[in-house]
Image (tube, rainbow, N blue to C red; front, side):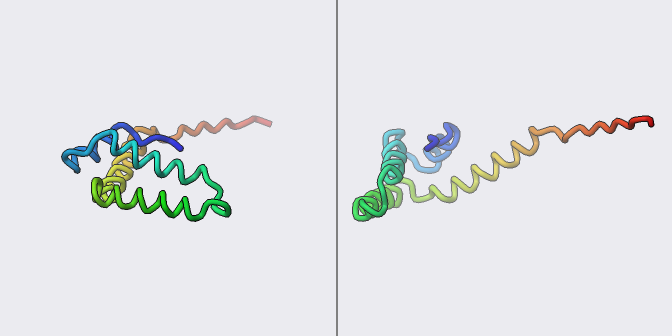
Length: 95
């Protein structure tokens, strides 16, 4: 799994005073550990990890989804603006 973008982490901390990198790391760790387990063998453990992550997020990062959407929109706009339009060159061959 890819770690959260540093600017996104900062946006989360701005929106949630007192939020620490350690808490964000814990949320990421719980999510990553969930995907390391085989659902057919560890369904109960996966549910436990999901509950722990959801409780932590509800308590410490309640606006995570809104910040994520805002960040994604901003990134999409910046990406679109930074990408120059494609150049098309047409070469005509003479018979």
